[in-house]
Image (tube, rainbow, N blue to C red; front, top):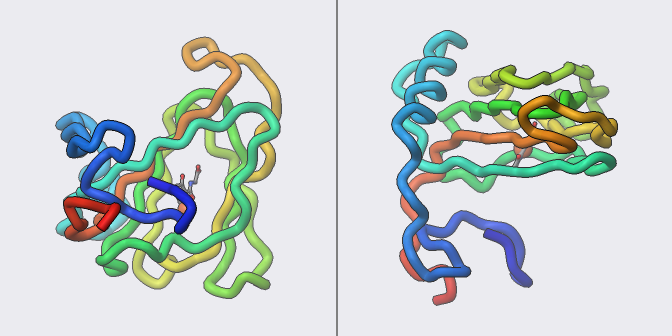
Length: 152
Ligand code: MD6
Ligand code: FE
């Protein structure tokens, strides 16, 4: 969730006050299998962030470091319009590689790359047969225990 005090993990949906719905079992199994394929074991995601990008939207270079367990990798599943994923090093000044992520692509980063700076270049306009004029990205994480009431 995000609000005036910034962006953080919360056990509950701030709009409903209810716990987030369980992750569909097929999502968990996809993420676990992708991580195993990438050579990491024991991954059990407890959070899935879903971001929607419209043409022109971008995500500036950042590190994902709000998770309680930085030893667990991140799994990213791309759907809809293709994007250019920027994947740099552990210094913001490291020049990022540019990787095209198309519908169905799965990226996993962990180990020494877990705190790599990454982002998404401005989304090019287009029309995807299933998703229309958008990209949807799912990221699976081990966020760790969250407080029940984020407002406290
Ligand atoms: C992507 N997403 O959309 C990469 N990071 O391909 C991210 O890096 C990301 O979607 C933090 C929070 C949500 C995200
Ligand atoms: Fe990220």
